[in-house]
Image (tube, rainbow, N blue to C red; front, side, top):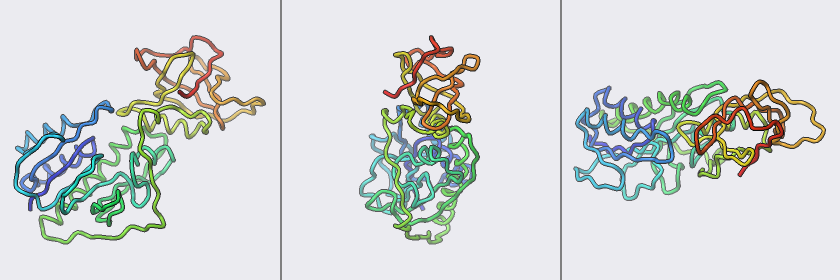
Length: 294
C-alpha cells in the first residue's frame, strides 16, 4: 500500500511526524510540500527535514517527482486544487459540515467555539462536501491564541492520519458517511484586508480576533495617529455608560495601556507595535487618539 501526501503548515508537520514515528515510512510513496510566504513559519523546512531523515521522496509544489502511482493520497492544510487524483482524502480544520471552506480554525476562534476538531473526508467535486471518514475533537478555553490552538489540534491530525493509515495498510475499508446538508455552514477566504480590526464589534469579539490572527499569521491591524500598528495582545473589559459612544476612541489610559471604546465593552491594548519598524507603539504619542480601520 503506497500513499502520497500533500502537506503544509504545522498541521502537516504533526501528521508526518506521527506517521514516521509509528513506522509507516515504507507506506509513504512521496511527499509534496506546500509553502506559504504569508505566515511567519509554514513548517516547509521541518517537513523537508523529516523526509530527509527518513529517506522519503519529496518535492515542493510546482516541481515534478516521478514515482510509482499511489493507491491513495492525503492532503493536509492544502489550499490548492488537486486534479485527476483518485482516492483522494482531505483532512479539514473543522467538524464538518460546520465551517466548510477557508481558514476555518480562525473563524471558529473568532466566533468563540469551545469545541475544535478536524474531519477526514473523501474529496468531492465541491469543496469540503465529501463523505466523512473520521473526526477528532478537543475542548478549549478562552483566551487562547492561534498558535496555541494549532498546537492543541495537532493531536487530532495525528489521530486522523494514523487511523487512515492503519485501515489502509490492514485492508480495512474506510467509512464513508454523508454530511448533513441542512447543518452546513461556510467560512470565507481571508486576505490582507481581513487583518484590520473592526471597532464596531464588541470588545470581547475583537479580543478573540486579535488572538486568532496573531503569530504565525500577520497580526491584527489598526491605524492610530496616522501610523499602521499591529495589536499583539488585548483584554476586553466591562463596559461604561458613554453618552456619545464612538468606537475606536481612547477613553482613558492605565499606565501606558490605552482603553479603547468598542461598540460594546472596552478593550485594553496590552501590547502593540508599529507595522513598519516593529518597535513598541506604547505609550501613545498623545492621549486623544483614535484607533480606526484602514
